[in-house]
Length: 187
Image 1 (cartoon, rainbow, N blue to C red):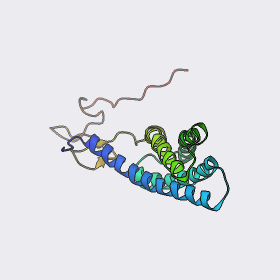
Image 2 (tube, rainbow, N blue to C red):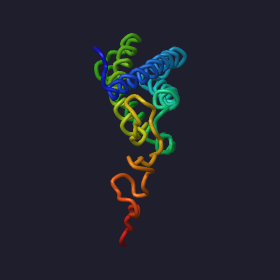
Image 3 (tube, one colour):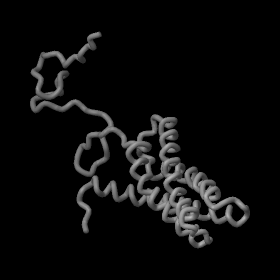
Image 4 (cartoon, helix red, strand yellow):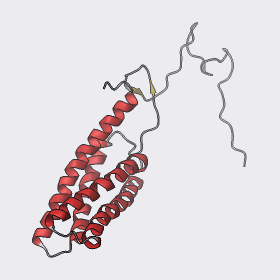
């Protein structure tokens, strides 16, 4: 299948980057989970919460500086607050699945713990992808493209009229007329 839409191509690239960071985050999450379970006597869900928190920190760095590096960086405090909020919801989803399997169904062997930890990560990942791309790492405002496939243009150049230089009022204005004035706010 050939991808023709640039929007679809961007989404596929974003999904691939999100998946790469997320895949590494899954390895961190499962590795820390099994390490904590092996070296401590913590209950399974507490060990999982510790592992999830470590993975959240790992993933933030990967998402901010690689997956979503081209996104709006102006509100880092807002971004981090929303990231932590949505990550906490993901933590509850992820560990809720593990809790239900362990304490609800009694599936509490090391293999079962890892399987349901993995299932919980998968379910939470769907929520995280949607929330991170929609609310946390917002897209930059739309920019004009000079031509299809070209680099974004960051400033607007006055358009040239067929018979001379650009007029102060912009395209469609008659020579000698004043440019549009901004409307004043009425109290």
